[in-house]
Length: 181
Image (cartoon, rainbow, N blue to C red; front, top):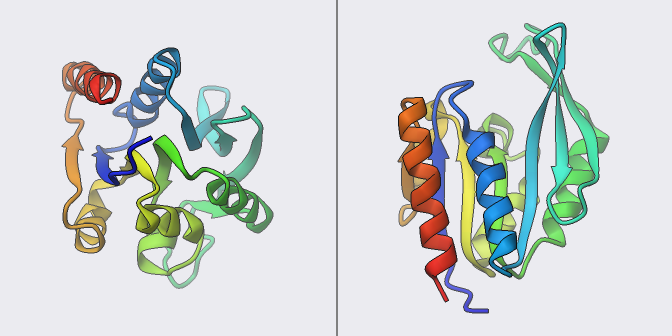
């Protein structure tokens, strides 16, 4: 494996399909005999309403409840809607620690905790810093993309602005990851 450390930030507003792209890329890359590791953040829905977020280990398929919807719970930052479970963050960090070296490292997602508070999935940032991967596909919200670029200035940014764009980005990523030796 050639550990070149290419980082690609995938960004877009809520419900634009960032996780869908990650899942499609993972499925295709696995079929190309490449090692894919990291974490996915999957929604938990009740009555068509997102009530929680699961963290899934890409390598094993194991998942744990990562956060639950609780608007205004953080008095210091009342805009925060998701309250994270510390034991699941710790588990996600363990998963990240075992995720490198790899061909494709997927981190869905780094956010406020990691980029603003130096909390949360701190091992995800350490994994990115290590460059022990050929490519890293990292989901970042648009409101935090500048902060992410500040830390990783050589990263490429792909923005999902529409369903049509989602399909073309998926194909672009698959072509890049599959054709890279």
